[in-house]
Length: 228
Image (cartoon, rainbow, N blue to C red; front, side, top):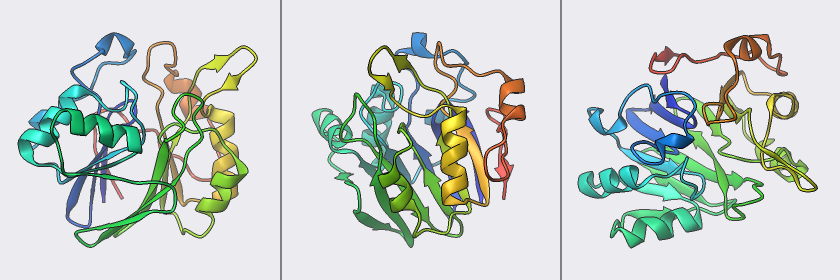
C-alpha cells in the first residue's frame, strides 16, 4: 500500500491495485488553504475512485467533480456530495449512509458515522482491501463512532486533528487531543493525521511530531509517498 498526502484531507491511496482519492479539493477557493497543495490530482496518471465525506468546499471542489465527469471516475459520497455531482451531470456517483457497504473491484467500502455541526449527512469510510483503512473526514469523537469502528481491525486510521471551535456550540470536529482518544479507543496499528492545512487550522510540524495518540503515528510530508 502507498499513501500520498496531497493536501488537507486529500489523499491518494494506492491499495489492492486501485488508486483512490479522498475528499478531493484543489483549484477552487484556494484562499482557504494555509499550506500549498503538494500536487495537482488532475495530472496524476489514473484515479479509479473518489471518496467524499461531505459537501464542503475544502473537501469536494468543482475541479474534482469536473475531473470525475471528464474521466468517468466513480464517486462514493455523502448525500449532498452526490447531489452536487449530479448538478454537474456526473451520474456515476453513489450515496453512502452510515452502515452502507459498497463493493468496488474487490475492495469493500463501508460508510461509518461522522458528526459534523454543519454537515449532518457527513460520513467516514472504512476501506477493506490489502489493508484495512479508516478515513475520518470531519467528525467529532462520539461514542456512536467508536461503536461503529470497533468491529473493524484497522491497519491505518486517517484522523482529523484540527478544527474550528465556536462559542456556545463547541468544536465541529477533532483536534489532536480528541483524535488521540479516538485512536486509543479503536486501536489502529498506525495513525496518520489529516485536515491541518486549512487557513487558521495549520499545525506546526513540532506539534504533530510531539503528538502521542494511543497508537504509533506517522506524519506525512505532503507529496512524498509512504509505503506500508
